[in-house]
Image (cartoon, rainbow, N blue to C red; front, side):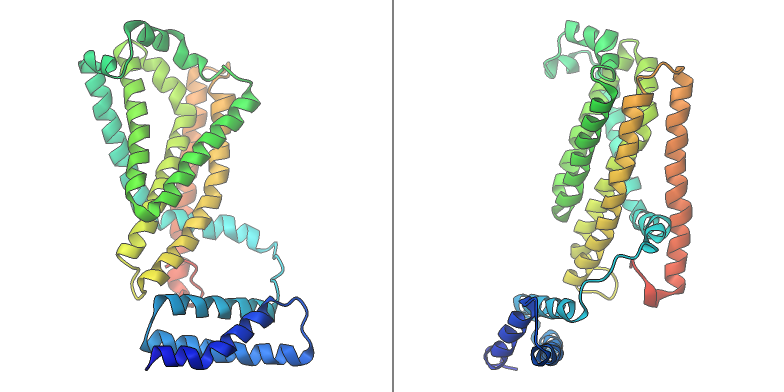
Length: 325
């Protein structure tokens, strides 16, 4: 098929469909014309895809057919019945299908942090290489690490923590399409955790370090691992497409799945921010604070692995209604 000749022959119909799709009000004749043109352009799209799949033309025709379909059917009304399904099916499923990616991210991150911490503990000169003097280290261990959690009003601190962690997660998700930036972001956070942990442990502050990190850190770090895993899975989806899909379709499907997970992370990071601003600096006994953090973290894991696995089984049993591949 001569693609240039095909485009020249049907360009007028495509422009007319685009014009009608953009109008807010249509006469009866124009509405009928819109339906006919939509059917024709959908056929054109099928022909182009099967014979000469030019990416730019396929994208243009796909946009036209989607816009025309929206103009014909009108905006869908929000169905409140979909809200429970989002939390009991779609969200845990989106996190569960990416589990191998974010579990691997977590294991690598923690291994790197542990190696850095041991290095800092064993070699006193490492801290100096990062520009930290003995007085800086002493101040960190004596009060600065603990003061960080009570420096601001709890409400303000919670908002700051949530915003900061959300920004890190957004960067991991968005940059995942190119993969490498995710590793850089994880390295930065692993370096910070390893350096701080090594200094605290090496100077007698191990109990304080783990005691203050545990209430919020378990969930907070897991959220970062999840965002990194989802981002890496998104990038990998166009390198190695999902079974039975081309690169563009695989990327599009995975991107939708990623957005579902991103919405869930907003709420999870809010919970982590609440723990860090209200539970970590509270007057509760240390063991109680840590128990609260551990309980919330285990509840999240149970949510993902119990409901997510159940949702995946449902998808496998009813592939024609599958939300995730």
